[in-house]
Length: 344
Image 1 (cartoon, rainbow, N blue to C red):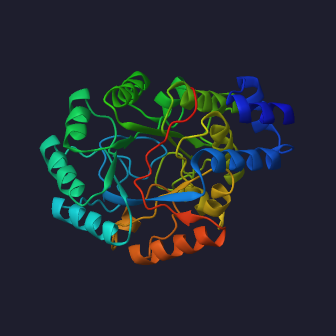
Image 2: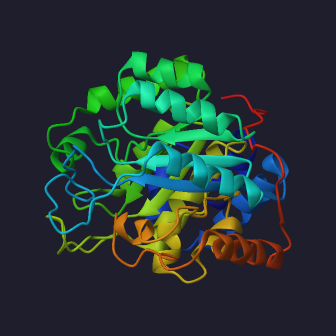
């Protein structure tokens, strides 16, 4: 396995069986994390890209069993921001030094194409790169967002096990999820995807398939986080995923896609107080601090124990900057687009 890790650092490829082996043992975790960190430094450098996260609506028409925002969850306090509030939060993010905002919501049809185009154009005037994360849309919708100025789109596959996907996402189609990701790439977006680690019924083979899928579609950004059971969902009694396994999936992804952007996810820090720092030292190069203000933070309740829900955006900016500089890294001052330098 040591030879496989070292070979992957050069060839950026692993067989499915090798990935399963790495996931099934802790014997090679240290060299895996060290190699992922070295590749991160070699291909994307020591700068950390900050993306200011605006959670602008927690209303969702989908009913995913693992998600606190699911349609049938009557325990969550629903909200949606006005267009002016979204643009105002984006302006404040720019004043804090962010060069990218991530505008994220549940699948809320209130935000029509016209509304979204208006918001995107106004935010673009602030000299910000824009990442959207608003779920499954038509090809025409994605094109309209792109024409208005959106640069990136985040749509996590969550799991590439089709049977598991359609069990956990009732009423949704795995084929349509794939169609969306294909459309986004064809339309010229930087495409972000990712998976949940520790879903009930998920296997190590399935996680290996997830990693190989990221490689297959040549994703530009991959976010990996543990499944954390929400008490207000049908999966409340499930065990959930682990920080350690999530970290390994992330690190192996860095080996196979050395030049992409990989966030140190908030969910990792929910399970480990130093989770984002450890992730940054194991292959990650992006952090997405929340720039949403007020009670909206606590209402965007994907999972319990979410960090920083009582902090201000200014405090979050200072806190994460301190953590990053504390490990000898610095904050990037550019938009943080992927600089492709490796063959697929």
